[in-house]
Length: 277
Ligand code: ATP
Image 1 (spheres, rainbow, N blue to C red):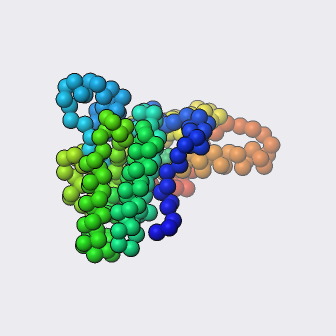
Image 2: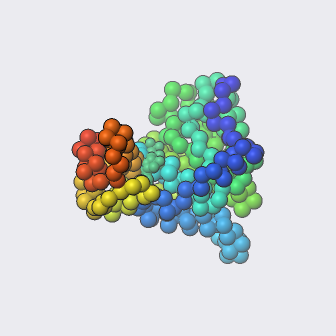
Image 3: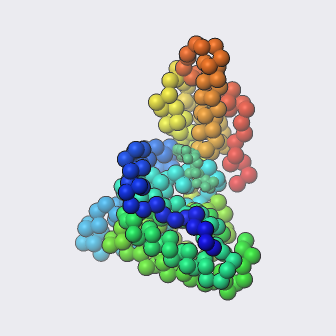
């Protein structure tokens, strides 16, 4: 385990990057109203108004676990949560932390949490939470138990108010997440990040087409024709259509905006990805 793919970028460099691109916020996330509300109450509000929660002795801390099919915005909304809190976003793939050598996974975990504390305010995002469990792992029960215990200790040790650090877990396979993580003070709130409904799909098309040269876009129709498309699928449709337009402009030398025809062609050439979940 000498590689550290999860190492947190710290200091001035990361700060510089923040100034270049504005952070994404909830306004960039289409649909998912219930998810946004739950994250507001459980995470954003205690983070930005700690005094109010202290006065009412409201319990804070613990994390939330986002679950749902791939490409529907789990990572994206976690990133937006960091934007809402003006906190640094630290994404970690749990599988990058796990190491077959005894004790190394635990050490990796402690380092990740220490780095997240050091770069506060921060949102630590643990993706693939299902990887820490008995079902899918090849590790022995004892080895996995030690990893689970270390993670539980770290999560319970977070003092949201003073550490200025939040934790969000995510998984495509909630049935594989160890039950120990779902108890109070841990990931005690499970939130379903659903595939976008028709209204949400129209909004996602709007968000993704925003600031591109477009003409006469029928968002309701686009939404109707993309049943079962995830947010990532929609982003892909917009990218494909844009690619076509640019290729054509380069070939003909005549500039024109992106139209419904380009988008419909792109939809025709793609498949929805949330069918099997
Ligand atoms: P995985 O389980 O594969 O990690 P995920 O649920 O974390 O998937 P994201 O990585 O958040 O999916 O989504 C992929 C991309 O799709 C995002 O970067 C974003 O651009 C777009 N996207 C997905 N859902 C939405 C949404 N509700 N609103 C706007 N964009 C979205």
